[in-house]
Image (tube, rainbow, N blue to C red; front, side):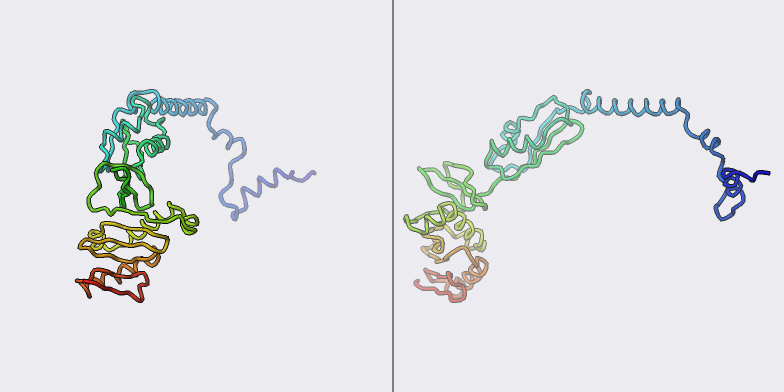
Length: 267
């Protein structure tokens, strides 16, 4: 008599071997438990309807269209100026608004803006969170004043000098140093010095004069002057200058170009 086939031995082992866990149902029985084709079709149709409904809500309905645009964080600019320059397509689906394009447009049209965050405010709004540049120096030009920010960017020309901002004077001769560093580099050096000034000294600084890369002079209120040198070691120079002013409050000239060997003179 022929012995049991391989399939029969496997089925018998499934039923009898306790180590393999509970016996598995036969293949036909497992196939019967799978969803019927009709059920799969119904599920697929429902998913398609949900996707189509979501797309319609985002792109086709009036529920999620741009109705208002707001701007915050302005100081010199007005919110209306920012909104107008942004030129957000009111009435368009909110999801379709390209926030990167709006950001680039604002930075191009309004150089006073240092950075802007364009955000969607569901379901109907676009928010423009603006950070404006702040002047650390101004350059007098033709009776007007060019504002220079902490990055050395000359971004705006105004008819009235902003209060408390020192005037930058470039008294640079056409020397090898100027050819080597260039005017922009010297402006950045002056900005670096202005950013290093202690608050009390910054408020008293009226002029930052640049003769060369390593020759920056400050003119303070009260006919006082400071030889600062280059923009390097700004923190050490700031601490030294404060100590000198306290030690010799009546002095008219201070030299911190070498912070380890400072000097003061005059009265």
